[in-house]
Length: 396
Image 1 (cartoon, one colour):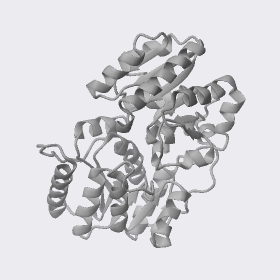
Image 2 (cartoon, one colour; image 1 turned 90 degrees about the horizontal axis):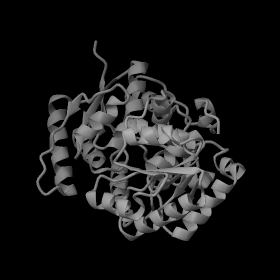
Image 3 (cartoon, rainbow, N blue to C red; image 1 turned 120 degrees about the horizontal axis):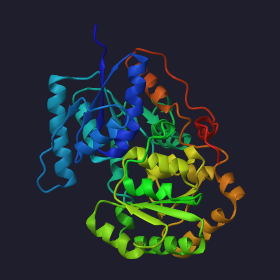
């Protein structure tokens, strides 16, 4: 007798990173059959990311694109998913985060009476105008979700404050921690030749990773960040900087104009996930506007300076392993220098471990989804955390 299918809907590389450990945990538990459904704007990139985990999409939904608007993409994804689930209805659908694909999957499943499980539920900015349209999308997904899988206790409290039933909420941790630790543990050689060369020539210098990708950082904010990075490199002769850029040609041009040719700065294009995970595991400090990197870095005992004015995922800020700075050049230089000047101060920021998980989130998610279908007992929520970096075996 075949096991009930659970369809994991994925449209972006960050989603693939978070869903891959869940698919593997579901297969290991043997209670349901995970089906990876790739769609959205970049299904090829999704497939490449799954490949890093030894996985491949089971279903790829080719979306016809015209104007390229969010409404067009969402409408087309709903149509494609509805057609898929008409012929192959799953026992449940799992969506992640707050993308256009996530809301399309949640709505299509709801209309087909398919239970929805929401991974990384309960994240809130508190402002519908902040990071639009993600805040609206995540709130809408919550309205049709049967099982809310939250990354932190604060996210769970957000849902309870919105009158979501306690029994429908589980604190799992974030599966991005599972993914980062699993990939970094393998110590794969760098795929990007520029990074491989830079790390081979590092001669013991400390690594600073700068990952600034968000659209609101483009233009003047990015110029201020680049100015700060240039000053840090001039001030500290014992640091190397690796800066992966956004694929947008204008952003790449801005980065090269601002810091290209500076000694001990390596500028690359977007990185394969294993390369990024290994860099984070070797970094002394991270400067980023990426929520993903902000959540992954503490897994390796690496503090993050967050180059945004506001964030939705503030667990690392509350835990002290990240600091919210915005794009002010002077403040970035000041705070980065404080950590570069004192190893004790730097290590103290992450001494409490990663608030986003203990590396076991995917197992909890797999068991919780099976419990939703009446196939397992409900798992215990994520306990107080030990440092995942210690479990990984890194010495910081």
